[in-house]
Image (cartoon, rainbow, N blue to C red):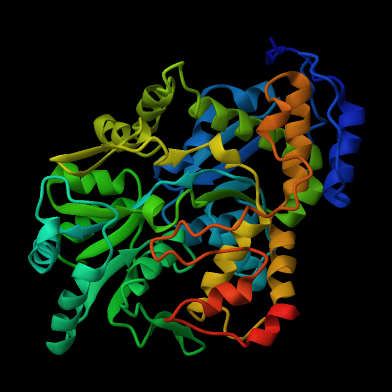
Length: 473
């Protein structure tokens, strides 16, 4: 077994590893792992006491478990994990240095780096999870959807559920001079893009961002607004919104309270989509190369711990994780509610409990690797909906992804974990070009290839369409 860190021992093997980490961050290049030795490798830590931010969602789990299970401590790190009131404050605190790093929306490092909203060069060396979101509508809207599509009026209707049954409701409200109100968590959130994708795939226009409309409501048939995740159920219950897209446990909370029905998860909108990332400023990473690699090592181990299964494929650590997350200093929701999705099940209705082992993925499917193609997808959505206001050549998308997504740092950390015996070589796509294979596993069946961003943007009927000749540049 690999040697476990004890706080009263001095860290060792510092100089060589420190030099390696610094070289990797300053000048990315492939690394070779030493044969597994079972010996603990410590980096020279430029900073040991760290403060990381998070939002009260179950997908903060890798940061929380890295602290609670001692993975940070085993790297010589003393980490404080601090809840933030909203995504903007969280990002601002990372930029200002109040926080050393944070659980972030995948779109935040990209948007900040290109100057949409807060301007700062943020990088991510670690993707925290796949999937994990849902779209919930109020009971009243669900009943109207069932009336429009009788097949939905069943204890366990067929999935995936598209927004087709929502179209007549949207049309009726528009005819009455109103708009359906729906919540999402932040303009550059996965939730915003997933909700827009779901609506647009059924021909419902979710609105465009323009230089003069930073709310993204131009031409909108449905009005989308920002609501902090923990406030979603209460805002729905009050009638201020009629639906929302959010991460867990706030969809399951609506079911538990009997105030709404999750109609789809983002697994059905885009199978195994990237969700949150761990974000730090580039300057922080440059100034703390050894600490950065040590943090990523701990996060990788936490993800693997979260996804550990027994011989029958059942999660062995998720109930413990759900109990920890239910604490008021973390997510602060009822254990039974958090447990639903964390242990591989999801309630769409109280009569509709379904096995969803991949609702939350924290390590499997090489999910923690920072793929360039993931970053490019978010950039295509920013351009599709006008947050990127001008056409860009295809090469621009990859250039930006490479500025933000740092597989070189991830691989440096993973190589050491292989040497220590915590990972196997096949767990990590060492030497990858950063692109996942093309996939059409979206709710509308449109194929996505990260190497072809212009073609992907043009494939959708609703949204911006860039000139085809940009694909060659």
